[in-house]
Image (cartoon, rainbow, N blue to C red; front, top):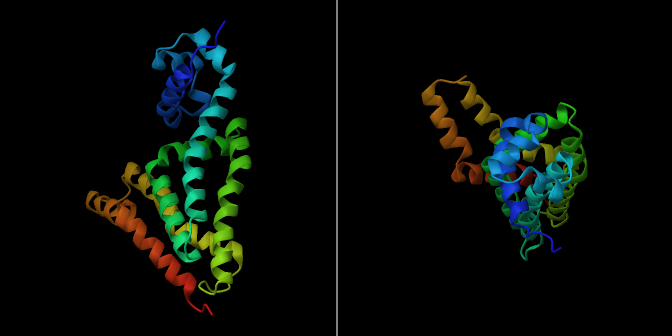
Amino acid sequence: MPRPGRNIEQVLLRSGRQLYPERGSAGLSVRSLTEHAGVNLGMFHYHFRSKDDFLRELLQQYYEEMFGPLSERARHEGPPLERLRQALIFLATFVRDHEAMLGRVFADASGGEPVAAEFLRANAPRHLKLLLALMNEAEAAGVLAPVPRLQRFVFTMGAVALPLVVVPHIARMEIAPAIVGRQLRKQVTSDAAIAQRVELALAALQRGAA
């Protein structure tokens, strides 16, 4: 019998992208997933066998959609500093646009959910190595100051990407007055704000370069 088309898999994965950020691994049941997708329960098991297998596919597909374009920017022709700039802007924009999904993955992993923890162990080193290599290349070219490598990486990601994780939580918790919340979005999460933070971080990293 011919295997049903991948359309059903993609329908289930699209529903997973909508439900997982809100419910997480523990709260996402196969039945609620199939009901949301309008897919027969038996077809889920035909395509994915188990919820863990489904979550592995969901998270890996999601990651590859980020890592592929990030790798292209890192490998593109041009000076290493410009490639680093474009990689940082892309990664920060991705973090902003997918904050709910990323936050859920980290929450699940820290809560002991095995699929999320396994996913982070397998994939986090991939983009870390890519960005470290770009920074090392820029240092070797004399355009970044010689700084301990992990210190430089942590500083850069803390300046560029971390606000995009923290600010949405501040806005949702209504810690800051409404007027401040509006300014936080404009001055922290917009495309222009991301690009500006990247420039500020790179300027700091270039101080003292040969």
